[in-house]
Structure formats: structure tokens, C-alpha cells
Amino acid sequence: MNFEVIVFLSNDSKNLLYEARKIRTNVFVSEQGVPPELEYQGDEEAQHYLIKVSNRYIATARWRKTTTGIKLERFAVLPDFRNSGVGKIILEAVLKDVIPLNEAIYLHAQEKAVNFYLKNNFIVEGNMFMEAGIKHYKMVYGG
Image: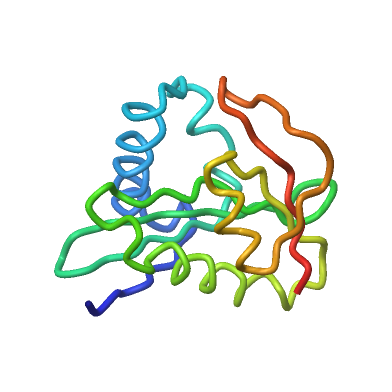
């Protein structure tokens, strides 16, 4: 499959933000029960990513600067495309942009995604915690 990576800011393209939110609504709100008001917080100050294949948007992610570094967030892949390598493609696209910023890079990984991030040079830091009713772990990028 030929994946196209699209990078944008919220204010650059309301159409692309709409597509990213559609994926996140499917994955986080519908599948996992995350309240919509929590899901879309922070979109305005984030750098967003979409993966497109055959004119269909299939995955999204974002990052934003926080007081403790660069936080990677909202990694979502539509069910039909999970375990296809698209998660690694979008993670690598995000890391390519944030590593040169020379800041701490971290994320809050859902428990079921921890092994994916471990395989991609992240390290668990601290204990499990609940976020939006889902078990998470803070993970930091180890390069």
C-alpha cells in the first residue's frame, strides 16, 4: 500500500481537522467511550498528522508543546488498517519532526499500546494511571 502522510495545523485546514476528528471519533469516542469534550481538547495548539491511502483517511496523530516537553497524542488507526504498519509510519513521521526540537518527548500510552511504543524506543516511566476511564502509562522517548 502506498501511504501518504499529511501534516497540518488546525487553523491551516478545517477540512483536514474534520477528517482527523472523524477517525478519532470512530476510535476513541465510539469504540472506547471517551467523552467528546475530552477528545478534542488541545486541537488548536497541536500539529496534526493524517495518513491517507487510496483517497481514504485511515490514521491520525498530533503533538503539542507542554510545560514538560513535546507530548505525542491521539494516535488512532481505523480498525481495518490496524497491524498493517501504518501506526509505525505515522509515529516515525511525528518523531522526524519533533526530535530536532531537542525537547523531552513523551506520551500517555493506553495499556494495550505499551508494547508498540516499547518496540519504538519509548520507556515506561512511573505507574499505571487512569485517563478518560482507560489504563495508561507515561512513556518517554529514549532515542
